[in-house]
Each structure stands twice: as C-alpha cells, then as structure tokens.
Image 1 (cartoon, one colour):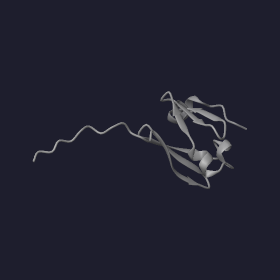
Image 2 (cartoon, rainbow, N blue to C red; image 1 turned 180 degrees about the horizontal axis):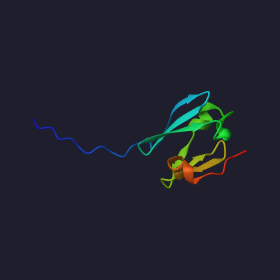
Image 3 (spheres, one colour; image 1 turned 135 degrees about the horizontal axis):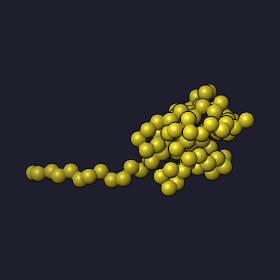
Image 4 (spheres, one colour; image 1 turned 30 degrees about the vertical axis):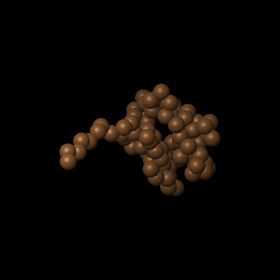
Length: 88
C-alpha cells in the first residue's frame, strides 16, 4: 500500500507566549523568539498571565493585547535600536 503525505496546513499558532518569569516573558512569533523585559515594557509587569498570553498578531506586523490595551509593532522587537524612545 502506497502512502502519500500531504503538505502541512497553516500554522495554527502564529504567536505564543512561551515563558513568563519575574523579569519578563518570551514571545514566539513568525519563527523567532523575543524577550520582553518588564523593565523595558512596564505595561506587562503587573498583568495577569491570561492578559499577557491574550496577544494577537494583526496584519502580520502588529501585536495587540486587548485586555491591556497595548499595541506594539513587531519591528520594534526585531530592531530595537531604531526605537530609542523609552516609556518612563
């Protein structure tokens, strides 16, 4: 009996929080992992786990956490040197 393998379907998880600790969290998106420290991204410091993990990727470049009303462009994680303004 001959078996044929089909091409895999689309990835169902385009974005995933892979780890959260006392310093920040790891975000896996588009086959890359980024660390968002609570000192650099203070909006997440006192957030609940379900608020941090409730992230969506919009238009393949826009990260949105609706429960926290936080928006980030994926490019600011890829190229932080281009974004020198810091939240204070």
